[in-house]
Length: 183
Length: 233
Ligand SMILES: Cc1cc2nc3c(=O)[nH]c(=O)nc-3n(C[C@H](O)[C@H](O)[C@H](O)COP(=O)(O)O)c2cc1C
Image (cartoon, rainbow over the protein chains, first blue to last red):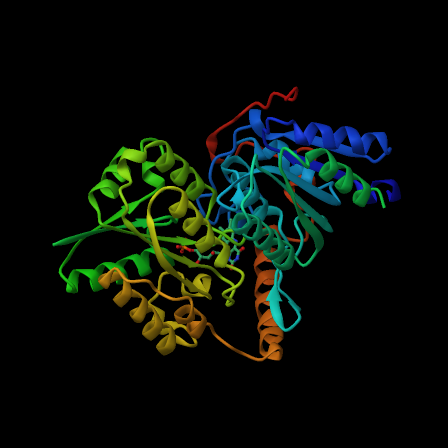
């Protein structure tokens, strides 16, 4: 089991620069166990907040869609990397649909951290990395995306960070992420 | 008469977002507004009624829950569709309201920022927002039921006043409305809520502690529907 302790899963929405694919390759070159889930061809319905996952089908979404493919994989993941186009400082629509449904496998308990309530991990994920990809950023949107990811990390009570990639720095950015994850 | 449209960004029609939407509606009606509440989720297949309502309004108030620190995914979809159908946008005032389970402002505030950035790019006039914590506990009950109900109602009232006047609403209003308690109280709250969660889990799941998603024989046939999954994907 030890070998699996740093199992990395990359959830990647479509980016023109194929950022997710390139990151996967970089990690594999470093002999890190990595799985890429390209979400462009998957279909995930909205969370309707129906309460099924805390009732009739406890711990599971009552509705059948492609999260049935994604969530079992995330349950075996230690490090979750999201590669997402950024819209108005937030995740892409498709990525957010999946993220919303990750709440199903999120630890429902509350913890105290720095005097505030927080929640727990998604499955056993101990590190969350979000790579926001955008052709061009302005500073306000950079700050917005970074804040959002930092709040995600805070509420899940785990480690991680946000990376901001654009056309000019993508290669360096992916290199930095791969370097950081191989430590 | 001024026209306002309130958009319920929650999939639930009787939850806390809708309680706030109704509250907002009553307030604006008393200020001689013509007000319409529209729901996002029943319109997901065809947004045109919603786009038309937005087109007709001078003020748009988007009210929704916080899912993982910002609005639900489908809010992004609505914004993308609005961006594609620019003809419906003509400098309307946009106000944002977000509410979620956690009592803190910072954990929900990214939602407001998203709408602000959207407005900036699409020629809307973003006029501010409001954040409300403990929304899950409220579960559709009025604001007065919050531990800091009086304060929250008063501050939300000031926010609505600004909406009615089409004025900017400053963040200080919702910061004032945040419940402030010592860390120890939150730790005790966590213990109590966790006990409830564990009890519920035992009732529903029995001794089986594993997530159903860890089970290789995952039963994918709830809901009466069966979907074969193409494993090649
Ligand atoms: C998928 C999902 C994710 C959620 N994520 C958060 C969260 O990150 N922070 C939080 O405070 N509440 C979170 N909540 C709780 C809701 O924000 C809260 O229950 C809200 O009051 C629901 O609003 P509604 O009644 O209008 O639907 C989440 C709920 C769901 C269903």
